[in-house]
Amino acid sequence: MFIDAAGLSPADTYRLLVGSVVPRPIAWVTSGRDPVNLAPFSSFTWVSQHPAMLGFTVNRRANGRKDTVRNIEKLGEFVVNIADETMLSALHASSEWMPPEVGEADRLGLALEQSRVIGVPGLADAPVRMECRYHSTTAFSPTGGEFVVGTVVGWTVRDDVVRLGSTGAAGIDTELLRPIGRLAGPRYTPLGEVVELPPVPGG
Image (tube, rainbow, N blue to C red; front, top):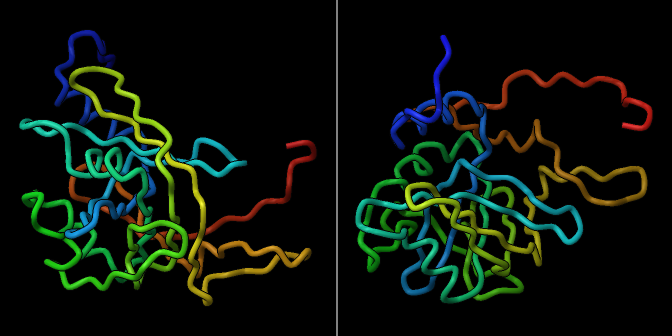
């Protein structure tokens, strides 16, 4: 089957994208203060190695921009929390629309913890938290999402998922982290089998 992209509606395009680009990591973003907004975004990646910069796409709702984008642009900071398998139900529930005056973390009974560098807190139980300063927002189309980028200014990593390299530098053991991947629709996947191959020379 060949599908011509030119004739697709926004909804049809979205369905094909989320079924093709899989599995996707999930940025569980805390933004704003009093209340703290919490929302998951599965169009998420890093866009720069040094300085470390993260980007995620925030799609518009029918009634306008989401609280996450407005909070980030207003305060200039946010936290990307990485959930593990034990947090799946709460992560999924946090995607429900709630009015701006309702804090999703409080509503779901998730504890917050003050960040070290910025003023927005992260999720206390998240195994990885990345504190970010806002860099930019890029809108690609009136019907598409806005790509939000931030610079990582600090990591908080749970001790049991840290792996020290031969030089003593800290890394994160993915198999111990047990992150969640997003598929099409309200479907997710655990880490699954990890296959390690020898390094490619020059790769």
